Length: 223
Image (cartoon, rainbow, N blue to C red; front, side, top):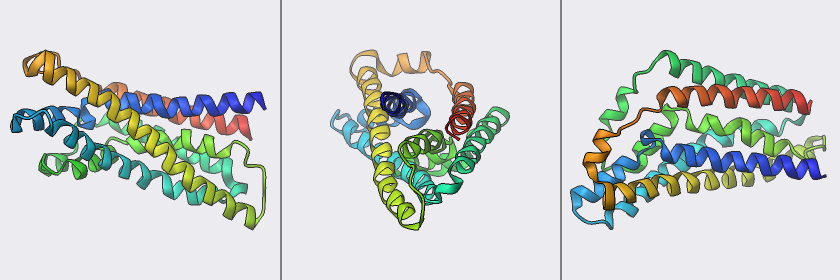
């Protein structure tokens, strides 16, 4: 029982940590929140921009997690699904390591459409995929029942879990990105941002590989 609670805590901690990590990454959009406040010359534009970015990111997370919610209902194939999900995440990480260029279609989305931009950016960078092994691990804990009715009940519970994971992750992302945007806007200024711009593409890709490997390892350990 204690081991199960420890595992749950660790997995939810991973959800929060990944959200903070996404929030710190400028590729998830916090510079656009700073830009919105500067263009309108009104700091009130920043929370509006952050809210739109959060909405788009949340929808991207749900768009990735919900199909796995249906799949995990096939209880007898749970380990295989988790292994396949881990391999998918690793493949995305390797692809981003090989292909460093940002998707051109993101440049064609007007910055004013922040929710759409955030949704597409999260999809293109594999942000939702990073959550999949963690989410499947949370769903697997305590899922010992078998049978059609049990699968239906499990799927219903996991839909709620999917929304909870996406919400906690998005809140963490918005908090981290929002704090950086506030510090840049009110204290450090745009010149500091241009001088100290950092690129997390390689770190992002490697983190996907690590998360995928963790998902496969946890699936084998639980099997």
